[in-house]
Length: 330
Picture 1 (cartoon, rainbow, N blue to C red):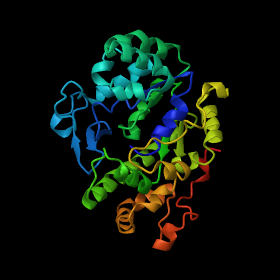
Picture 2: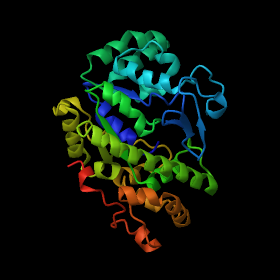
Picture 3: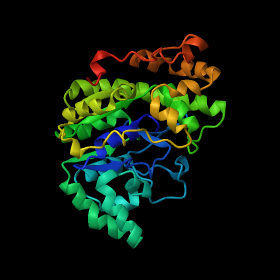
Picture 4: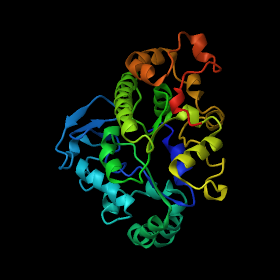
């Protein structure tokens, strides 16, 4: 949710040899995520509930309260991922599919999009094209936002050909982008700070759990910073392709024209030319200081810098992050 994951999805999923599944848990858990084996949390505020991993989460805690069919358990969520990687789509339409899925799915969903315009029947189009496109693709890519990192351990253990990219971005940039997005539910200062608390708590937990996965799967788990990816994106993308075992033939992956972050109400020109620091022109200084108080643990662990004063904040030549060498893409 505004971490640069859309850009990463374009890079890895919009290849001609990839089948891409955009946010498979968006339909069921728009504002929530599974945290560990028995907890579900809100992503926009500090609010977690203990749950039975085998039972669907109570609808009163979900944003889509009236959609009883889409709510499901952690056990089912893991199975949804397994099914995607196995190209099994039996429960897919009920539990996963939204128009967003096709629109953001890149080349592997182009036939589905065309079919839906003519037939107006997602079920028919889905079963006609998607299992086959998944099966014939060289790579299967998922953009997964609604899991804590520790939940990836089991699926990494059972699938030796699965690799993970764990993407981080400056939390101040994420929060500013959420403020700018019309659809994200933060409008007041109180909501902004609550969102910052929830975000940075999750980032810190995910980073520490990711370190364990990095030790267990050093060749299949990779930490990437959005700020690093945005510097010479095309060449950095090639390095990621090498890590994933993807073909470097330029006919198979997107041109630089596609490698821009999706935005809603944001200033597109500023965002395109200044993707990593444009937030410093719009996030209020007094809000920034309050975010710093609740996110200092993330800054310390990941190398993001505190900005000492307004002058330093407004000086865009001053970098806000020291990325550890071991996490640089190349």
